[in-house]
Image (cartoon, rainbow, N blue to C red):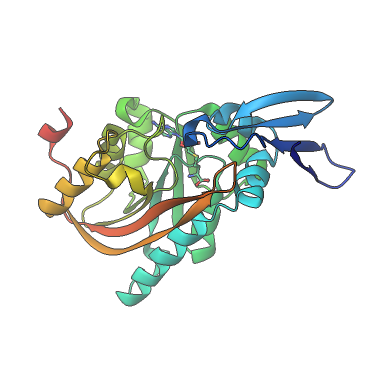
Length: 262
Ligand SMILES: C[S@@+](CC[C@H](N)C(=O)[O-])C[C@H]1O[C@@H](n2cnc3c(N)ncnc32)[C@H](O)[C@@H]1O
């Protein structure tokens, strides 16, 4: 037995997503579905983004429609509320969107009226999907490893004069590591804005990703001034259980010292 749903008008390339119904609870980075597309049935792990982005609309359908993800909307609303409360205009924001994927966060930021959005993602399929599905949303989009930027990539981001960093649904697991988070944070201006979402487990004391420690230290040493946070349901798991994340908005008051990075 499986849950199937046909997608897309008949004139478009079509696929069917089948979620496992074996009752097993899997770790978030082990979840998978089967996709029937062009007469082929393939098992795709949710976190194999090169495969997911390769099929137009699969990410939107699976993660946002079937599993009800709302992280981009939650962080956009929290950021908008903070800006309003502080009398700041979204049009002043020049954003570095880290782990930008196929551009869903950029799209929400545009709706707020931000001035500029630059995306960075480590896999080329993310940039390709963004150009395919959301052309024009980003002022620039780099396929780059933030811990090892080329001189040209660094110059592009420095010249973009960025004052805000967003990282949505991309921290932990085999995603953006603390070192890349820190490098990106140091690329935006001081003062600047920081908005990110993170799985609640990664903020607990026993967290092994390094984020609980990094963020606590940034708070303790007053590198950031936390302005708002919200615990929310990021999405459902493949077997329908809620997965909880925190959304954070903070002011960047100091860069991360170089010796933290070494
Ligand atoms: C769950 S997706 C989120 C995409 C988008 N932020 C959203 O909310 O729809 C995570 C993204 O982070 C990217 N990613 C993983 N590791 C990364 C790294 N070290 N640097 C930049 N991007 C990374 C992945 O390629 C993937 O596109």
